[in-house]
Image (cartoon, rainbow, N blue to C red; front, side, top):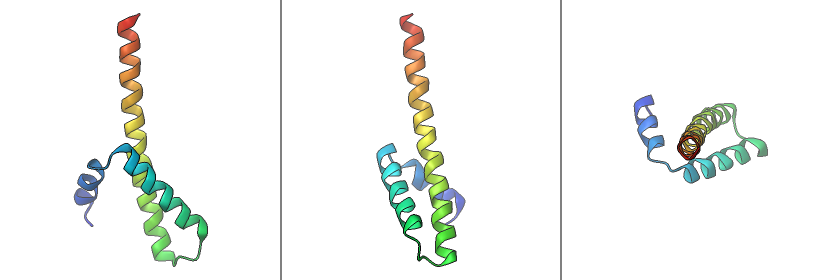
Length: 72
């Protein structure tokens, strides 16, 4: 999958979908037994998902901070 396709696919994921997929990736990595190539692909996908989740959380925090600023 190209980087552009991966990004557009990620952008369609909700926070909850990205988080749930990240949990699945972590469980697969923690269970062990996957070949090295698969483990590396899982790790990379996990990094992408973690970044996406962080972006959602940062956006939510910014909205909360803006709302707090308006009410003060």
